[in-house]
Length: 231
Image (tube, rainbow, N blue to C red):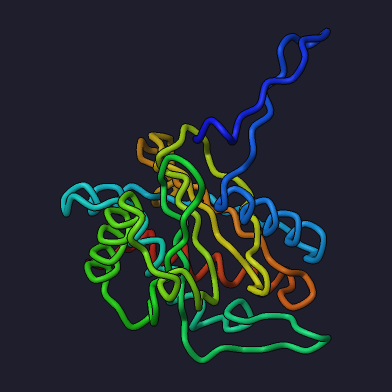
């Protein structure tokens, strides 16, 4: 932060006031957040799943969960195309390509590069793209084309000590999905309560285009892919 970005105000009941000017990325986040809240009538749906096999597979391959969630969401978007869409000028736009924006778990302002045609890629291919994006995001080397074109967004909150949070929709997208860490928890398996890992997904949808049954079907499809993960 530059010295010019911070100004000290006069001391008062609250003590000395420091005024901080947001940088370009923070201004962009503020604008998009306000736009999303002001223009999108959203609803949230939550799903908890047995992530025991997923957690084990990710550990074996030394991968994070993000690639698996992106791959599962991409397959679900192909099955439930109403979420791979936008509401514009009182009509629906359905997209033929499944391009998933991934909000990376980084310090500082969120960065959301796009995995193009995510439904046609393997988990390993997606994981490699995310790893490459993460390295280049730290170095400020992502180009505008890599930050555009998403038809859906996955928010990776797995690095934080929260279950998950309702994500903001990125207009004009119809939906966004957030996931937290896979936590040690009792899970029901074959009718019995056993030790395992649970993962919470929170889906936020634009209710003008995505109705409750669409969101429920999407979460069911995503859960099915995550509970039986493929390499």
